[in-house]
Amino acid sequence: GAVVSQHPSWVICKSGTSVKIECRSLDFQATTMFWYRQFPKQSLMLMATSNEGSKATYEQGVEKDKFLINHASLTLSTLTVTSAHPEDSSFYICSASGQGGTTQYFGPGTRLLVL
Amino acid sequence: DAKTTQPNSMESNEEEPVHLPCNHSTISGTDYIHWYRQLPSQGPEYVIHGLTSNVNNRMASLAIAEDRKSSTLILHRATLRDAAVYYCILRSIGGSNYKLTFGKGTLLTVNP
Image (tube, rainbow over all chains, first blue to last red):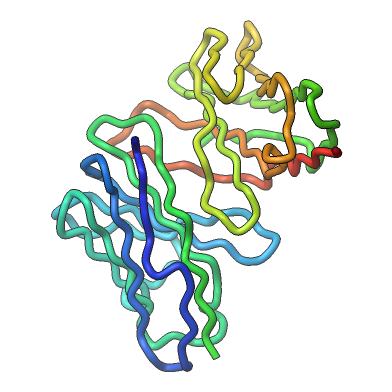
């Protein structure tokens, strides 16, 4: 149980385009979802936290207009990187936890390369 | 969140036990100790968590010091598939969300 999927697993796009990444909880209802970013040889950095039906809470230094997060249902959250640039190239990972959950379950990650 | 300190790297031999230490001297009474691991090019995987008592599950054991200022993740028989970065994270039970703050973790190398 507690499986989280992400789609796509990798994406290459041109600079200036927008990219949408989906995060789904397959066998539980995720009241809270988290989005992280990880650069090579670095640790995970939390970007934002989203609760179903509410606006996301962004960490300091993360541009909310550039990284649009939607958590419209209890099983789906999306992260849209708008007007992507090469410096946005990274490994994006989502996680999810259920109501009152003490554990976060992570997706497999999405590798984004912006040319 | 309170900070944790872990060795940058450790090495083990296959089928031998591994003890991964974590110091958290500023832990508060409401902080759970969580362990996650991340295999190369994958998302993190939950390993185990505890509050005060030692914990066991199918993956590992967690030994928590009596004063809670340190803990040790124990892999009873390391396999090559256990090679990963192991993160020790404190998470408070207070608040409306369960944010995790990842440090640098310990890179575990398992030798055949």
